[in-house]
Length: 259
Image 1 (cartoon, one colour):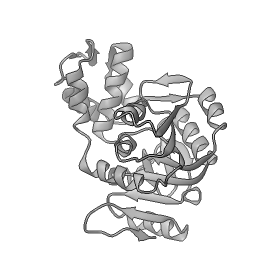
Image 2 (spheres, rainbow, N blue to C red):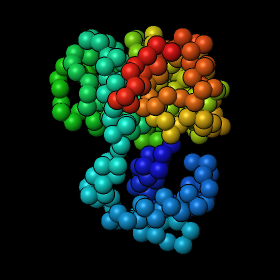
Image 3 (spheres, one colour):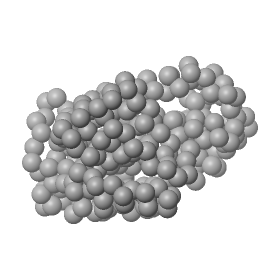
């Protein structure tokens, strides 16, 4: 997870609890205290957020603060989102996971299609232009402020009611062992999405390469397509090739390829 993504999650948590400590950040994101301090320093540059000893507190979040964080989405993520949208065919039923890259994908989607999502930010992006020919279904359940998502048993049960052509899955960490994440709830939701879909498409920026978190999501044998901005490290690229996964690279100088 990049700093920009962490900042969005920290802001969401502050909206709910009004206070967060360095220890909270270190434990949840599995980062050092130095990294947590840097996150807080950057976040407290926004109006409505105040640094205190050992953490930060929040005043009501302003539209200016949200807009500032949204501007941090990189061009790489937008390019990956656009490439992911190109995999959507007319009248598809798709699953859209959480994450800034998939939120970027929403603006490139074209009707007619139906989208099922558990992402609060994804829902906002999907409904921004109010295209009546894009059907949007939101999974119900408990809102998780860290992940800006609906997670838990009820949401997973609801997911089984849908027939899905393609699942677009956000990647927190990608290693030779597959995809992993910091949260058991998030891992369970991603696994359910993969199980429900005919095709699984991972969206992954290069900062996630050679990263591994505690909770396993899936192995490469469960993946059909990986979309990323740069060529993965050799060890990962070899596994992608061995599993006949289609690898799409969005770097302008690199053509999309069948791994």
